[in-house]
Image (cartoon, rainbow, N blue to C red; front, side, top):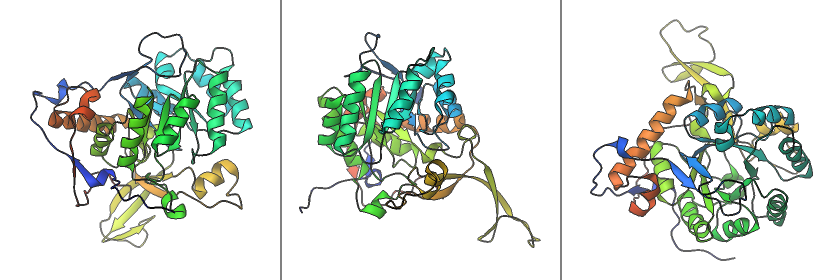
Length: 371
């Protein structure tokens, strides 16, 4: 046993220090990024990706076909949920749509069954598939690294996203095994209880800083996955060196994510499903259920319940119903542009070079709330 004494920080522990800027307006800020991927051996020359590097997570209620199409039209990325059947995925990826090719990832686990399903989709006539997100809760197993190497050797013309990890050395191992982009984050998500159930995790801002440093030294890239509760958190993640930022809770509750819209009635602090017996004026609010992919609800839906050797590492909550995703995207992108004007970064690419973080002991209250 040993203890690391140096400070490790979350997004809430810092603010970005403002600096003099030549930018006169937020509209001058360029949020698009161009990336070339280290291990990908596709046909494109030069840049392999161009877009606004914000991703919808492969979670129920977020990583849907409808969300993917809506975000792709805006230049954003989606990792689809793993639960789609092969036939539906073949139909989706068979459409001759450059937005889907460039902005949507197929998601998979690491079992032999997962691999056979991917083969069936990838090799189906007419399918055009560029990105694969290999997603496990614990990216530290030898089995995971071996799967990434196996996938890379068999499919050189795909971009491999792999995670999740939180340390530089494992980021390096995954990139050297064949991953192009590493997902960083264990336990920071709004509906993840891994830190409480297991005591395992790493403060997200520090994880992003350390993993980005390791990845960039090898020509790889990272995704900051989890922990963002407001537009300013996305800015902090990009400023810390993240190439992409992945969102779950902030993209939940929208029309494109599906799910039943649930109505609750509030009166003087009370909440009820109906107004029966309430004669005075009450407030009506609409919600959508959202849950972690290791929660009991997710296990019941996809695996017939929790296995006897497992415990739930996610929770179920109601998030406010938010309508169409486009309005939320406008708010997010406006916040990031504003950050860039404060820091003097004309391009999102430059934000990490322009940023000075200020540690603060105050708990910053985010605009966005899951409750």
